[in-house]
Amino acid sequence: MRDSADTGISSRLLDWYDRHARDLPWRIPPRSGAQPDPYRIWLSEVMLQQTTVAAVKDYFHRFTTRWPDVQALAAADDGDVMAAWAGLGYYARARNLLKCARVVAGQGGFPDTRAGLQELPGIGPYTSAAIAAIAFDRVETVVDGNVERVMARLFDEHTPLPAAKPVLTALAAGLTPAHRPGDYAQAVMDLGATICTPRNPACGICPLMKDCSARAAGTAAMLPLKTRKAAKPVRLGLAYVGRRVDGAWLMERRPGHGLLGGMLGWPGSAWGDTPPTDAAPVPADWSPVTAEVRHTFTHFHLRLSLRVAHLPIDAPGLFVAAQDFTPTALPTVMRKAHALALPYFTQTEAP
DNA sequence: CACTCGTGGGG
DNA sequence: TCCCCAAGAGT
Image (cartoon, rainbow, N blue to C red; front, top):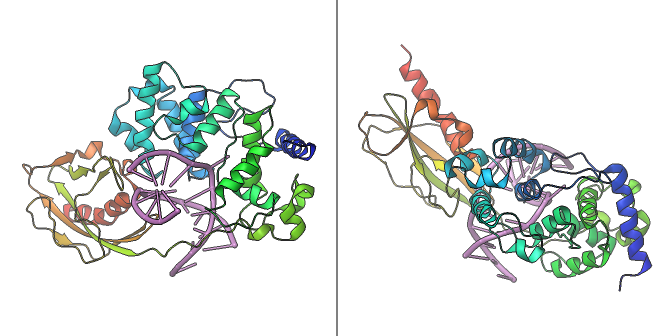
């Protein structure tokens, strides 16, 4: 039951997009006639999950330069991909990226339907719709945070999220046009990112100003309603930064699941709500570092105390040679720990 | 449905 | 300082 008013909204949005589409590294400009590369669309959409455009740009460039197609990525070393993803967060994305690349390479290419795409690791309801619409011109509706916000305002929907998600999804589906679904999907998201913003929406220059119920009601800035999240608890932990006399660092590869799964890190205690007990990875004269690492994850604050030591050349464990060690290959909390411990080593090695 | 899972920027 | 937020997925 797509009526003329709905057609008008999608038309106005596409017109606006034709004139104001942002220039993004993974984007084919509207009306250019070029065919999007499903690999680049997929990679960008996974990187953009819960992550800002600004944070993604450099990573996208590095990945596509080093691994230009899905076959190259599928053949990559796991540790190299995890290292390249380091700092971007949500590391399950990188693990699933590799799994997905290997399935797709084995199949000779990406599925070209939403249902087929959604069977792949790391591709859920949003990403499957985005790839199907943008890369394969399928009439699918993307629903991300931007779309939820735009729909809540267009229809002045006051049901709080996440309960409102099915309603907002249905409203979004009702607006999706039969032509240019990929450009339309990107148009709604661009509108949400640049005009229909979470705070201080620029309603005065919005192409959908006269269509917007919340604009008429004066409720745009307070929508969408959301249930308030629980406060983050503080967790405590202890990490051991040890260095061999030849400069190699004692590290560990974290398990392939859970927090920072698959990433390199410093050995240490579990992180809990009580002061950690000693968990030295190898016997040594471990010295406490006065300052502590403070880092905030999605659902808790971490205070990480450090111990440092010089280790004998025959100490057991995973050692990363000095010339192979790059802090940028570490997740941010581990990079902070290294930065805090480094002076201890440089200072004691000076004459 | 509720929880886990990173990080950096903005108000 | 603290909270919110960002092109969500997996369990």
